[in-house]
Amino acid sequence: MENLMTRAIAHISSLLQGLQVKRFLAVVLVPFLLLTTNVDSGRNNQALSEQVRDEAQQIDSVRPKTTKEWYEEARETENSPGERLQKIGEESAQAVKEFGSIYPETVKQITPDLQDNTAQAGK
Image (cartoon, rainbow, N blue to C red; front, side, top):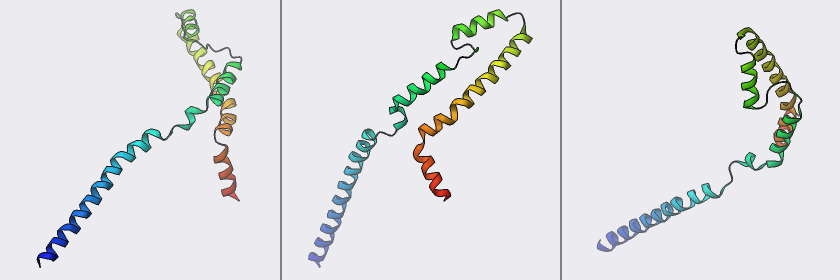
């Protein structure tokens, strides 16, 4: 009977030690994996972001592009709220047009794998 109890205690003890080893590995390996895995791959695509930035700068727009230009335009129409609202409306429409022309091509460049998978799923 004493032998049975000793073996049971030894078995329970070895199970607990196994769990402690598993916990230790989980505590060490999970943070290691999280810290070494590159989750944000979009940020690494510098060439694409530069291309999009260049494309946006190439669009010849009458809209102000810098804060200084915005303030100058606001000062010009300071006493005429109707004119200011009209300019804001025109500039907003121009911005939507510009975004609409850039957006589809950018999406194609960013997500070629997704588009391939979508095309294959449709077959």
